[in-house]
Amino acid sequence: MKKYGSDGWGWLLASGALSVIFSMMILFNPTLGGLTIVVFTALAFFSLGLFNITLAFALKKIKEKGGDAKELLQNLKNKMS
Image (cartoon, rainbow, N blue to C red; front, side, top):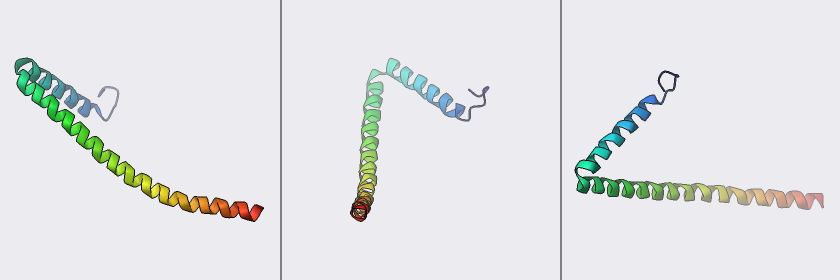
C-alpha cells in the first residue's frame, strides 16, 4: 500500500498486527481470548447505540426543518390554485 502512495497504509499495518496478536492470544489462552471477544463485542454494541442516538437527534432536526418545507409547498400550491 505504501508503494502505491496510499496514505492509510499505517492503519492497515496496525490492524494486521493487532489481528495477529489477538489470534495468538486466542490460540495460547482461550479464556483471555474469549474475554477479549466479549469485550470487543460489548464495545461494538455500545458504539452502535451511541451512533443510533446521534442519528436520532440528527433526524429529529431534519424532521423539524421538513415541517417548514411542507408549509412552503402548501403555500406554493395555494398561490398556484
